[in-house]
Length: 125
Image 1 (cartoon, rainbow, N blue to C red):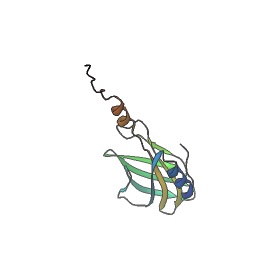
Image 2: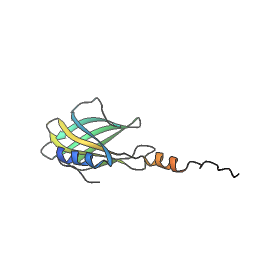
Image 3: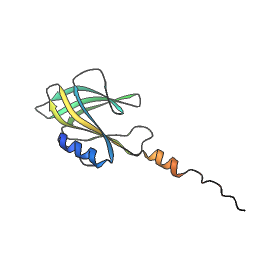
Image 4: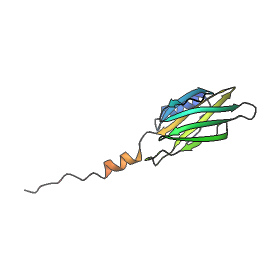
């Protein structure tokens, strides 16, 4: 669960292939922008304090995170997922943030349902 600080490090995370990576570059806006499995809306970006305020939409619910620092990961657990999504902002400018969302590739609920399948019946002759 390493945190990428640059675009090159994000590409390195993608090359590892363990997680789906969705990069974003959003501007201050009240409308939500769809990024992978989330809807994001930047409410405030403070370059002096290197922090931001973000609203996001998960499973039809709106949540807000205030005063989040640069490179501070936000862990989001959508319903039905055992492993959380990770949202990281690695650049803050006036009225804009850039970062990525990291999502596990293998969803544990699907893996469990496949392993719990009933084996085929064998007949004896």
